[in-house]
Length: 396
Ligand code: ATP
Ligand code: MG
Image (cartoon, rainbow, N blue to C red; front, side, top):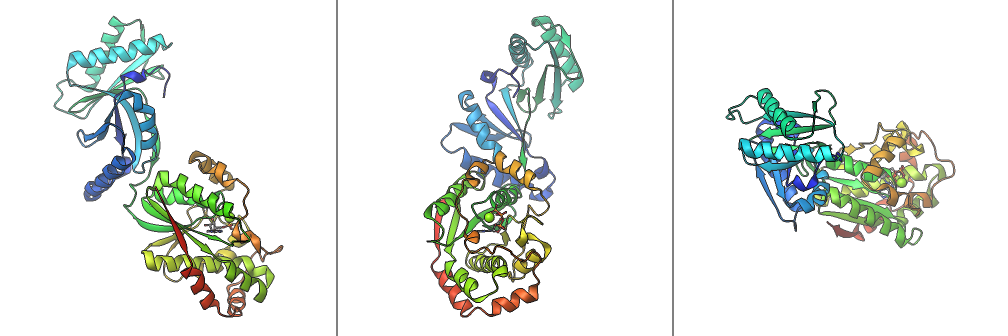
C-alpha cells in the first residue's frame, strides 16, 4: 500500500475474482462458496458483505482495515483487493472525496497525480475520460498539485462507478485460485518438512478441501516431532479452514521391512506402506486424491524409478504432486510466503529417516521392489493393526 494513501478514508474492500468470472453457469455456485468462506474468516468482525454490479464488497470499520485485509488475502478465488472509500453516486460527494485523497497524498510528498475512472454503471451520465478530466481539473484548482502525469504518476486515484462509487489508489494482488471445496476433497501426506505444506497450499489454492495424514515411529520419533506436524497443520488451517490430521504409527511395518528385506530398498518400501495406508483412509473418508510434496530428482526416492515404485502401490486414486517440476528454491520461497518455513526447519526427526539406508537405490526397479515386499511376513495383518490404531486431531 502506497504511503500516499490515507487509510482513515478506507471503509470498504472490493474483491476481484478473475477466473471465476469465466466459469459461466458455475459462477453462481462459486460465488456462493466464496461468500461462505468470507463469512467464515470474518466471523467476529463487524462487517457487511454485499455485491454491487456483480463485484463483491466488504464494508468494514477503518480501524480493522489491515486485519481484515490479511484475512481476505488468504481466501482462494480472490485475485485482488482494493481498499476503497465507498461514497454515494453524487458528483459533489465524489469530488470532495477525491480531493481528500489528493490532499493527503500531497502532504505526504506526492507531486504528480492521475485520475482514472471506470464506469461499470453505464447509466452514469458522463463518459469515463471526460469525468476523469473533470475530476483532475477539480483537484488542480482546489489542491496544491500542479501537475497531472499520465505515465507513472506519484499517485493514481481510481474512481470506480457502480451503483455506489469506490475510490482507491492501489490494488493488492492475492493468490487467485478457486474457492475452497469447489473442486473436491484430498488427503495430503504431511511430513514435518518444507515440501508437503507447500504442496498442501498449492492444492487448496485450486479449490481442494484438504485433510492430512502423518506417519511417525514412536518411540523412535519423539512426541515433539508429532507436535511439529500439528503446528504445521494449524498454520495450514488458516488457508484450508476446518481440517483434520490423522496420525499413524508405522513402526511395526518399518521394523518388518528393516529385518526382512534388502537395506537399500527400505525407504521405497516404507513409502509404499504410507501410500497404502493413506489410500485406505480415503476409502473411509471419501478423499478423491492423495497429495505429496515430491519433486522430481530431489532425493533418491524421487527419481523416476523411485516415483514409479511408490506410485504403483496406489490402486485407485490419482496422486497429485504439485511440486513435481519445482526447484527447492522456488518451494522455499512459497514456504516463506505462507509462513510454514520457520516451523518446517525446526530440527525434529522424521519417521523415514529412522531406518533410512546409508546407500538407497537411486533408481529402483518395480520388479525388485515387489519381490522384496513379498518377503515380508504378515504384511496385511501388520498394516491392519497400524490402521486400526490410528488417531486424529481436528483443527480450525
Ligand atoms: P518434505 O519436505 O515434505 O518432508 P522431503 O523432501 O523431505 O519432503 P521425502 O521425505 O522424500 O521428501 O518425502 C516425500 C513426500 O512423502 C513428502 O513430501 C510427504 O508428502 C510424504 N512423506 C514423507 N514422510 C512422511 C511422513 N512421515 N508422514 C507423512 N507423509 C510423509
Ligand atoms: Mg520429509
